[in-house]
Length: 342
Ligand SMILES: Cc1ncc(C[n+]2csc(CCOP(=O)(O)OP(=O)(O)O)c2C)c(N)n1
Ligand SMILES: [Mg+2]
Picture 1 (tube, helix red, strand yellow):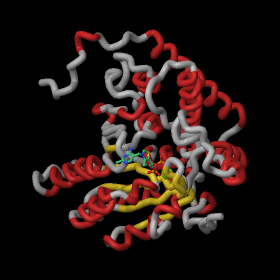
Picture 2 (tube, rainbow, N blue to C red; picture 1 turned 90 degrees about the vertical axis):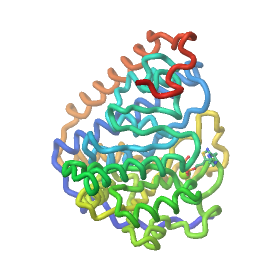
Picture 3 (cartoon, rainbow, N blue to C red; picture 1 turned 180 degrees about the vertical axis):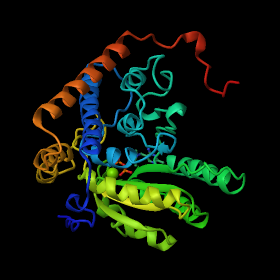
């Protein structure tokens, strides 16, 4: 039996939030949850093809980090990318249409679940290979810094947020990019979503130092351990890291301790994780926890939260309708988008 990590330093009790900000975070988390639940339904009805990796349980990480960013900042994801794209502002209908392989999808139906992309929202992907997004996010942070320092563009202070899993931190790109980010003081935030598992491999069995946030120290980067089931804790840590990056003080690594409530992908029978472990984490559901917090703190009332849920339900219903009614890409355009167009 693997020993549980002690509670991390960022706790909700220490974080302050306005009612407006609380509702914004809540709405984003509800969107993430409802969207993914509907994806599961559509996948089993045969509307989607290939691998589909859902994000249920990890919503506090996406909402806590991305909702702290500006719209002109950059977000870089993994194959578990639907909810990051939604938090970054890619419309639910264009994400759903992409999952259905339709022309109206955010990647024009050519990418599918693992390759969401939107230049309009500075959403850099969607990558099937693990760790592939880390150097891409690093490049975004580099160009931001280069435009400000070398080209003298004072408004070039965009930050890049790069998400990846615990398993990915054993890959080379992670270390190479921490080194370059530290060396050049790049405006990047490395967000590790430590959900304890890499497919069926337990984190503690695959890495020599399971406390990932400690790896930042070797490069002289601040490493922060956060309760990834607590949106306010993630939000507080993200705000500090973003302010630091924007001020030209360099990168931060945030390790969010979280859990996925479903199998690795919708094709995974999820037989490796114990019932006890799943139940223990399910009891810490970030969405119900935050809903209870908003009510307790009188930041919102029941009718207000109910109205948000209804609104999101309608958004997701509309997204499915839009995806179903959208056209498939034309076979005549098989080679389109392989190369950049003028
Ligand atoms: C370079 C590469 N090697 C192996 C794989 C196969 N693979 C897909 S997901 C995964 C596990 C990743 O786990 P983690 O980084 O913890 O992310 P999580 O799925 O838990 O979000 C692996 C090894 C891959 N996609 N790319
Ligand atoms: Mg993992």
